[in-house]
Length: 393
Ligand code: PMP
Image (cartoon, rainbow, N blue to C red; front, side):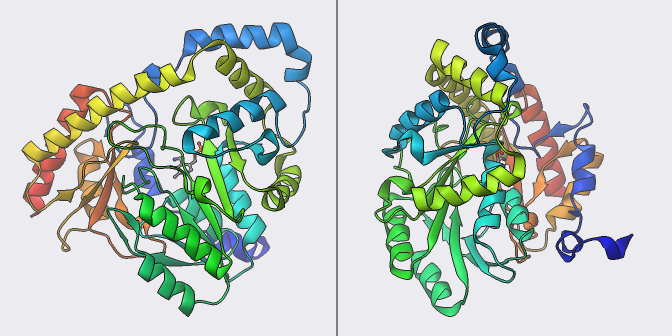
C-alpha cells in the first residue's frame, strides 16, 4: 500500500531511537529518558472529589459537546494566571488545546507551506520538530549559549533565508538543554521579530518550575505588536493525562488557531476542562506546584551531585535552575546512540541528544530527566552511566 501514503507521511520516517525507548518502559529499567512528571505527586484524592462534583453539579454539560475556544471559566482563570508571566490577557485571548503539543501541530498548520523555513534553537524540542516537519518545512538551527539564542546568528540567518515564517523558542528550562534565556535576549528577540515581520512561538511548559534564581518575564509580555504566540500547558504543573493546554495570542493570530481546531477535534474534552476548573476553584494549584518544585529540586541536586562524583571529567553539563532535564555533552568520539544501547543492556536509559537537532549532528550529546525516578534509582542509574562512560573514554 506504500503508493497510497502521502509524501508527508512517507517523509516522517520512524524515529531510530523509538525502538530502544520502547524498552525503557520495562519496569526494571531505570529510565532518565522520558519527560514524565512524578506520578506519586498527582493529586488523586482531590481529583476523586473534583470528578464527583463535576458529574453531580454539571454532568450534562461535562458529557456534552462544548465551544471550540474552551470552557469560559477556565479560559478566564488561565488568562489571570498569565499575569504571573507578566502577560495581561483576557479570556478572549485564550484558546484551550489538547496539551501544548496540539498548539505546536496547529502552529505548523497555520503558518507552514512546503519548504518554508522554521527557525529554532539548536537543540530544540523533538516533539515540535516532528510536528512542524509534518507540514513539510525545513529548519535553520540558531546557535545558543547559556543566555539563549545568539541574536547576531539569528539575524544573519534571517537575512540569508527566504520564506521564514516564525521563530520557535522554549525560553524557560528548555527541553532538552535545561537553559533559560536572559531578559536582554528576550527583548532582542521581540525587536528582531518586529524588524523582520516574523512571528515568535513561545513554548513554555516548564516556566513555573523554577527552583532558584530570578524569574524572567515571558517573551509574550514583551510583545509590542501582537506577534508572539504563547503555548502553555498544565501537563508539568498538574497532570499530562488531562491533556489541557492553551494558546494565548492576539485576535488576528488566535482566530486562525480556532479555525484549525474546529476541523481538528472540534474542542478539547468538556469533562477535563471542567475538572481542571473545579480543581483550580477548590484547591490551591500554586501550593501544589511548590510541592512539585521541592521534590524536583531535590532530585536535580541528587542527580547533579552523583554525576559530579561518578562521571568522568570529560562529560560536561550545566546545572538547570528548574524544569525536568539536564543536558550532557561528551567528547566528540562518543556516539550517544551507541552508548544508549549499551546503557539499556545495563538497564538504564536516556535520550541520545542527536535527535534534538533537526539538521543532524551532535551525536555526542544526551538528555537526562530527573523528575520521574525516586532517589535510590537516580543514584544507581547515574552510577551505572558513569561506569559505562569511564569504560568508553
Ligand atoms: N513543548 C515542550 C517543550 C515539551 O517538553 C512538551 C512535553 N514534553 C510539550 C510541548 C507538550 O506537552 P503537552 O502536550 O503535554 O502539553
